[in-house]
Image (cartoon, rainbow, N blue to C red):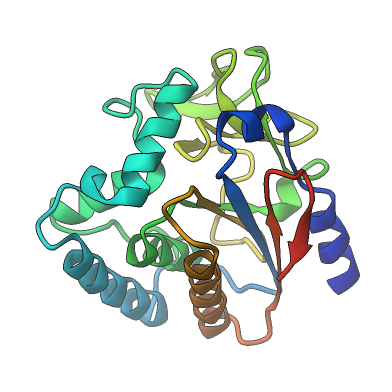
Length: 244
């Protein structure tokens, strides 16, 4: 599995059109195999509760969009035509829920990556890697790609807007508007054993802080599943990247 995970990470790309839009963008991709999914439990509760306390201290009464990295994400959304007041970057949406009382407990894997997102103030997405068809690619959408989601309690296909920044694989879109909404096909469930996590960074977040978030995520995943195998790769505007 180690060789397969490393090869899969090596095939992931950030399209030049996205790099042209935001030359300061970096994606740290992290895979974890041998995970034990399941409902929220004592371990995930501890990690998430500690992260909530950390995030409240970091916010210190400020609106999330006042923080430099979150302000940069709002600007990135505007640059591809989205309205961040209506469709917020994922970390801002989480922090707003925190200010309203606390984050929902979803499942032990999702709780851990949400914890790292709010404690380190960056968007993180989590996907079931076994549901992927081909590698992950960040592109600007044509507007015809399929995206499976739920609306009004029913499964629907909802194509992205033309020019929207999306993560996709060979079948369709896996996450719309960079890090706004994940699809149902690749979502993490209680049965997930192999996952991909995408840590998104713009200029105000230095590489050292991005790596620290990845370290915290690794520690959290290993607390859930001590035998898990974790690999990571940083992808930047050059179109290449490096293991880290």
